[in-house]
Image 1 (tube, rainbow, N blue to C red):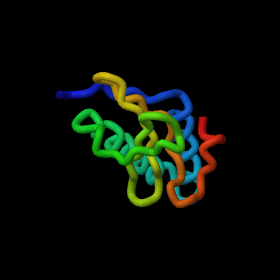
Image 2: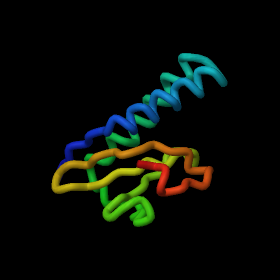
Image 3: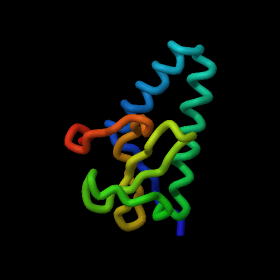
Image 4: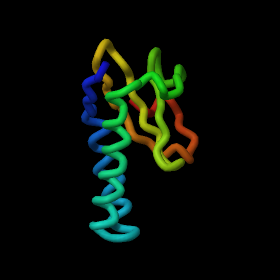
Length: 100
């Protein structure tokens, strides 16, 4: 079964933030490539999205998928739709009450 993958507004803003940060630290081309890799990882959720680890501290049914040991992609599966909720720095302690 192939799932539909959607990206919530907060996650899209997280991608913009990631792009801005990498562009500042490196350059625009590197930032574009980085965000493209994140997008590919997100789009890979269309096959077997249950592979991510459950993260009940963020809410019922919320799962996470890591990206290059740096980011944590938070998402929820509802029927045949995967909704990407946030894209967070996985190396930092995250207070669940501030995520949504």
